Length: 339
Ligand SMILES: [Zn+2]
Image (cartoon, rainbow, N blue to C red):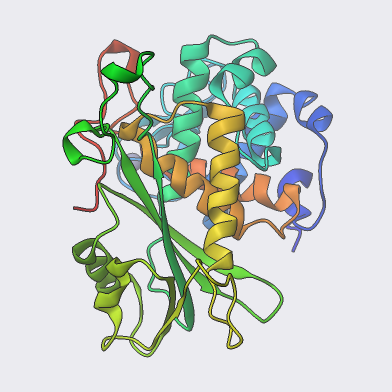
């Protein structure tokens, strides 16, 4: 529904947009768009960041800020959001979101830095802020038919030149300690429409303890789980009706025993890894995986709709603990591992 005075990019949910439209936004238009997105519950009326009073503040025209009449606090359209203390014009952030939402297989920070003509460091933090905004509100329980599977990343060991110097890479002590398993859980939608809700996690390996914990926390009772022949999923028998497919002999059984939706997730994930970002640090692996989960879940929506959604998420996400002051030495303390 279009509200009176609402920006066209936010109002027409079903329409698509072109990048050119975003790059042509004036500073005022970008400001209005972000303001409407941030305070969508109050029809764009400003809400004090500190005391929460609605539309009771004076507008400081030259500073483009508000001063609350209740608590005298001064705030801007980005105060308390993921873009707080921003240095670039707001329309550059909107352009970044537009480029990001159009990139079906993700986008590297270097490419973003060239598109926006900003430093790589700026683009890196900006893109991780966008990823952080996608992480909220994605942890409801899945129900119905759930597919589970895992894929390993960052486990590559460079082969040694001379055969006599090579180590037996099957032994645990010779494996790459940075190797991680990305585990996905996908809830199937209507027949023929694929999955409609996806969760992703990072663990050191695909094992029974991890799988049990994930199933306990994220699958509603009475759901049916679909998994491959990996022994880690044996633990689910008894707790859920569990359908298995043995990939050595078949990819999809006669009664729908397959993990094809989970494989779709990993297909897109690998394309991002190999074709776009090239390096995924373990510190941020869960964010990359979650980005792909978001892209998979929104694959049938228009790019205008996805753009509005991400702008809204950024406008309503709090200041990032991990990324604020990143290049001044603030980094996440540890990676977000399941176990
Ligand atoms: Zn106030």
